[in-house]
Amino acid sequence: MVLESSSARLFQGFLVVDGLLEFPFCYSSEVSDHQWIQVDLIWSYLVESVEIYGKSSTNELIVSLRDSTNRRTAPCKNLTSQLANINVTFQCSNPAEHASRYIRVDHYSSPSGNMSICEVVVRGQLDGSNNPRTNLLLKRPALMNSSINATNVLTNKYMLFDATLVVDGIRDVNIDHGHCAHSGEVGFAQNWMQVDMGRDYVVDYIALVSRWTTSNNVPRRVSNFIIGLTSQIATEVPPTRGEYPLCNRYPGAVPKASRVTLQCSANLPAYRYIIAHQAVGAYDGYFSVCELEAYEPMPQMINPHKQLKWNSEENFQLRNYSFVEFPSGRPSFCIARCMALGDFECDSFNFNDQLMICQLNKHRNGFQNESLIFSPDWSFWNATYYNLGRYPVITFCIQESKPTSTEFDSSLHHTLESSITL
Image 1 (tube, one colour):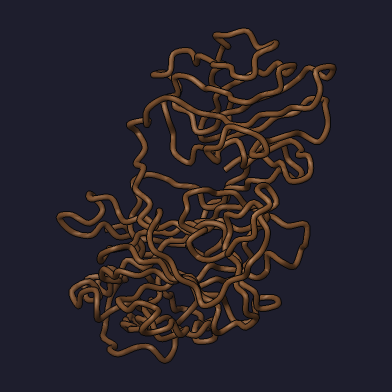
Image 2 (cartoon, one colour):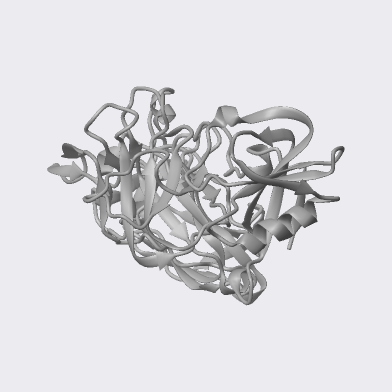
C-alpha cells in the first residue's frame, strides 16, 4: 500500500511497488514543491537498504524509516550520487535496532522539477516480534459471475477485468491500471467472486482492497460485503447468499482506496473455497474489488487446541436461532458447552445475567440482521481467533487530507464491551 502527497493524472504511488521498473509504470507528482510517497510494508521489517529505480535525474531524495505507529525511527543515507543518476541506493543505519513498517521518500528541491520514481525495492528481513502469514489466495484460481472488458490505460491493451486480478498480489487501487476485478452485471444477488485455495483451510481473517475513485457513491458497492466459505466450486454450485457457511459480514462502509480486514468466525471447520459476495442494496449493483487476501491462524492459535476470544455485544439477543437453553451462572459455562459441541453444532450464544440462563445458537450460513435485537440484560457472544500479533484493520492508500496513514481498531466497528479469552 502506498500513500502520496499528489499525483499526476494516472501515475499514482502504487506504481512504485508493481515490480515494473520503466515508464509508464512510474509515479509522478502533480506539483514540484515538497512531495513524498510512503510505502506500507504491512508487517514490520528490519530494513537494511532501500533501492530507488527510475527516478528523475534531477531529483534529490531523502529516505527514512517509520515504525508501526508512523513515528520516524531512522534515516537512510544514499551510497551513490543522486544528481545525474536515475538509480540510487540508500543504506539504513542500525537495522537491528529499528523495526520498521513504513518507508518514507521525500523530495524537497523545488527547482529540480516534479518528483518521479518508477520503483522502490526494500532489502531486509522480517522483525521477529511480529507474526506474518502466507496469503492463501495469492495466484490461486478465481471465478466471478460476470466481468467487463476495458482498456488498461498504461499499456493501452483491451483486457478482461475478471477475478484473477484480485489474487495477482498487486494492491493497485486504480482500476484503470488493470489490477481490479469489475462485474459486468448489475444486480445484488448474483455478484460474487470465488477463490480456490487448493485444499481445505481454516481461515482466521481476510483482507479486501477497495478501488480508488473520485466518486462518493462508487465505494458503496462494497459496503457490508459478505465473506463466505464452501466446499463446492462455483461452476457446479453458484454461491447463493444465505446458503453457504458465513465467515463474516463487513460492518458498514468501506473507505475508498483502502485495505480493510475482517475476522472470520472461529466456530467454523476448514473449507476449500472462499467467497466474496455483494450485499443487498449496495449502491447500483456493480461489484468491484482490487485485491482479496485470506490468512489462516498461526499454529499456536489452533494447537494443541483453539485459542479463542469470545466477544460480546451487551444488551443484544439473537432471536430465532437458539436450539437449546439451560441455566448458567456466568458466560464461561456457556462457552464450555458451545465448544464441547464442536465446529459443526454451535456458532454463538445468548446470556442473560438476571435470569442466569444461556441459549446456544446455530447459524452456520449467517443470520438476518433484524434477528439481532436490543434486549436489556442479554448479551450476544461469538468467537474469533485470539491474535497474538496485531494486523491493520484499515490502511488507507490514497492521501486525501492528513499527511500520515490511518488505522482504526476493530472496536470502532463493533460493540465489544466485554470479552473472554480462552
